[in-house]
Image (cartoon, rainbow, N blue to C red; front, side, top):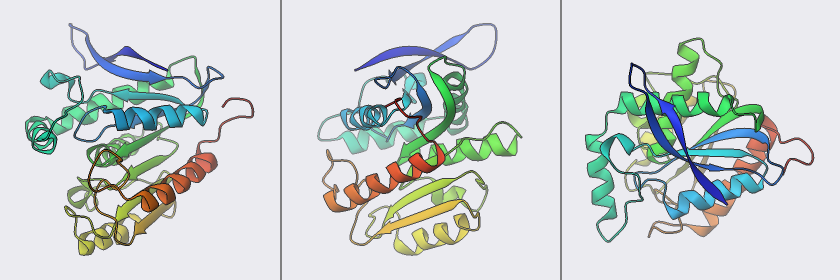
Length: 244
């Protein structure tokens, strides 16, 4: 089960509230994870991933990153890809980073979060999560405890500009229709200069291979990546005994 909460975002005399989906583990407490959406919003698929992370013992918050555009429902329909890409083109990227940072800081302050906070993001959210982790480190703020990025769509433009020293795991398919293999390998070379970075690739897997609502879904790659993700989180963002 999940609920929608309002997370303070932005600054100034008029407070702003960002709609955010929140899942609690059965124990009611645990480490925190900010879950960052694809271009389709906090879709049914993203919600299933949020619920799965909560089952592992995490307190999960998925902010509606398109909220400033007036969109707080999933993008659906035969033209969902075109709708999502149009939203991203209208989005203020720097403000989206700030909003995701606000979600991280809010989660850290919750009584239900009794350990560290990590970030898990898919596609658009994978690149956004990388930028959030890099921004925290560049500002000398408390870093994320773990970052998991699935085929981060903005990484081709970000990997040479910023670094993440925190433990990070990156998943990419080698048949990605949007990020060619040469670019994936360039990202790998750049990111793995940081010793705490793990980079996993999947032969024959397309973009969004984890999303079972999309035609690019690859069940085998999805299962392998999710297993690796769970192990990575278990190592770097451990759940205490009895918290799941």
